[in-house]
Image 1 (tube, rainbow over the protein chains, first blue to last red):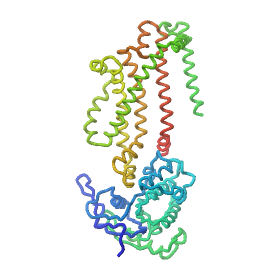
Image 2: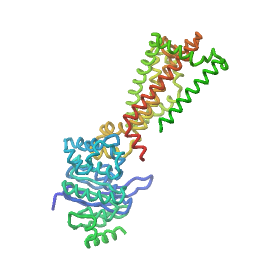
Image 3: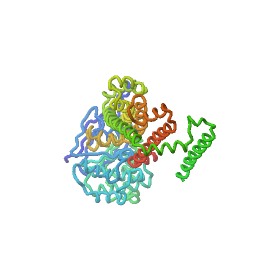
Length: 241
Length: 255
């Protein structure tokens, strides 16, 4: 088959909670090819974040293997806690270039995320949506092959969220990056992805891996009205019941 | 709007001085012990013209800043280490909790035994007293950096040293500054105290000697000098802090 950029095999994670062992992830298996956009969806607190953190090596897996063929980084849900408050927008984004060890095209990147004119602002001077754009730009500046996103639009208002979904698709379309996007929103999962991986409640295992064959470029109105979209929505929503 | 309110505070001070002048001038309060402000102002002006006074002032400030600078370097370094290494923290924390509440002036006699009555002893006392607030605030700041910040460093491939240097220390900067501001006042207190206990020069000794030789207006002039130093240093510090750590004030105000 293809040479996967990411492969997760037999991954299990559990926490030792006082004297009880809490199983969070149970025997997770999936692979991703380069440039793929995968949404991971599941009931709230089912272990989606744990899965991302394991892949990002922020958590040690108890069992199983994670192989990545390239560099990765993570975009956190809580942008205000993740951004460097003492740095300006420019400095936050340049942090990504510095960590990559290469100079990058800052102007191109700031235009890509639509933050031109805000280079010298500090995060606290920006709206939530703009702050998350800075975090996304910082991640892109690092030039990883894989970008993990942990409910990045989860704390934004719905209009901003829809706009950022479109912007993310536009950005993803221009760069050949693999994205693993965790969300608890069925619409968001389908709208963005090539594949939706559905997790069960704790201990989470994969209950379905749904291919999304909706035409690209997608748009919020047309795509979500299509029969295929509605069929997929029904299908995935039933898995979550 | 804000500065208008502040003006009333200064007007009130002027009003108190005026009341003092009247009460003291009419000898309602003992003139000998509390001379009228006008008289103190005259001796303050004379002091400013005497070179002895400037020697006292500069030697006090020199000791103070020397001690303060050592305390800052020592406490910030140790605080970062203790905040980063749990083992070191567990080893030293009980000792610090024991030594910290000790009133610093209580160790002056012991310090004299080992270090004599010169500048070394005084600087040591200043370092001793100024270290604690900076140390504790630094440890606190380093230990309480938000886990998301540290995770952010890790997902950008940073090792522990890089995370400490580029993420933990900037995050702890507001705490470190708070400790430094508290210690600035403490350094001044210990400068004056140590000079009063054993001094050959300095503002502390000047105040004490003025009282002993019954030059009461000079004594008050000395006290006012110390008050002015404390006020000005704090003012400068707060201005600097606001400028350098503006991001913190604004960022914390939002959440």
